[in-house]
Image (cartoon, rainbow, N blue to C red; front, side, top):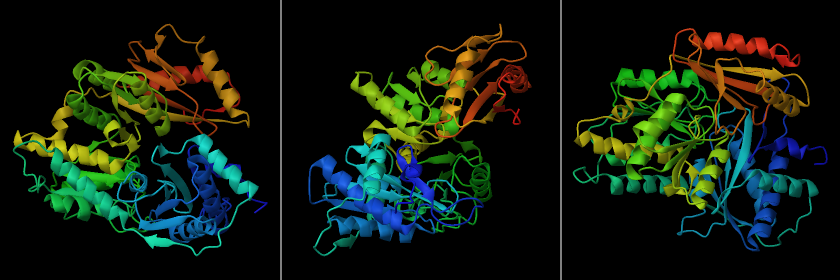
Length: 502
């Protein structure tokens, strides 16, 4: 174990690594031995932070090929130091958090083995207590404990029980939908008469069709890729992936469905497709759930990440009469900011990132793709009584004419400092038609007012990679290219930037 680079396994508030061969040049660093050590370290972390000696941990996994072996190894590590374990098998990330707040069980912590949408040869771990997901500092502490390799082993027999928690979690979603639909809606089968297509991408979200939609009366015939398969043979389970989104859109059109639902691998993200086969994701999804939340909590604050559009800001602030608080990229950043605002007395019921991570105050501020869909299904059932659909709620959302993301690589090991230098100096190099946007919390956001621009750009540092992502939108044809060309001329002064994407 001395050769393990434990720090390299940290990915923000998660642990992620290469779990099997599959991509040239990648060395396996998340082995069964490492997983066993992480089980010991996590048990010790829970004991230290909750000041208890007898702990119970629930462990679930997604459909990845290495999930079963790594889960067994992690559980072995837990039990070797005296933890009791519930083995939940195939589950979802939100479900594993819910084990910690379910009063029917005395579970101190939940763990999900997943690498979200990353390639098939990756895997990782997400950790939860009843207070929510662990933060970056907690992960660092766990990895330090693993590296220190100083544990007290248990002499008692290991206790591992199986628990089909995904079924319990699904039953909770069904009950939530039934209890929240409006008067006049069938309380048992509120989705009766609706054809709904689910695309799980062979991840862990296939349960939603049979365990949630069917009991509510929906016709799920034509749903696709529901069976867990870590080879991901059909498409990447990722609502942001163009091929994946096209697949669910095509299925909705083919089946003449009323709605399409797509999940990522571990079901903490989702997106939907309307009855015309048009995707409702990114800014559209934020606008839609904002319309629902602001109807319930008028005037409250919607926290989003930094790359959301000007049209969305208008829609939330002016159309819906809410408060749009554009913050930083990173789902934990968005969630923690919404929690901070509430603690400061500013009501905020929704934190949502453009990628599809959505966390609601009513649901423990858990980024839960299935709960987000459930919330929208309640609204859909209510709107049907009025002869309306979900897409009508965002009919007035302005759409940019063009949009593009350019990712500029920084060719130096000191990429963070170099990238910050670029951002800082750009402030003094703005063109006469460019205006810095106030209340921006990440990088530099600029409004481009020229007749050949009519848009904006955001230049920021990637959270983890040596990259400067640049998001550009324009309301006129050719506007993005014009803004990009002017920006490229400025960035050419920085020799360590790779501008090939321009």
